[in-house]
Length: 82
Image (cartoon, rainbow, N blue to C red):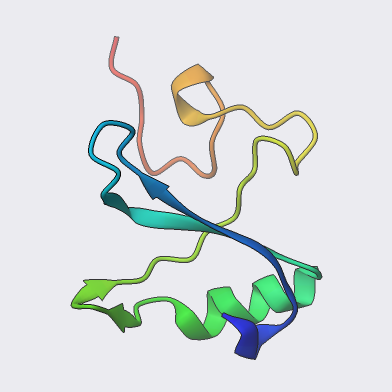
């Protein structure tokens, strides 16, 4: 992801019992511009036969953000049934 901008950190998530990678990671960029480039250009790339999905961590970066399961989320593509 360095080709999109300065990478501050990268953490590969592993299974706590086996130590094997779970198939996803977190990459922190120095700038929002680098994040935008990564989202635009890396989305859908293949790495070791797995498709890359680039998204934004919203819980700590967007004030007032609530996940969909708590009544927040983006858009109205899914509706709750109750």
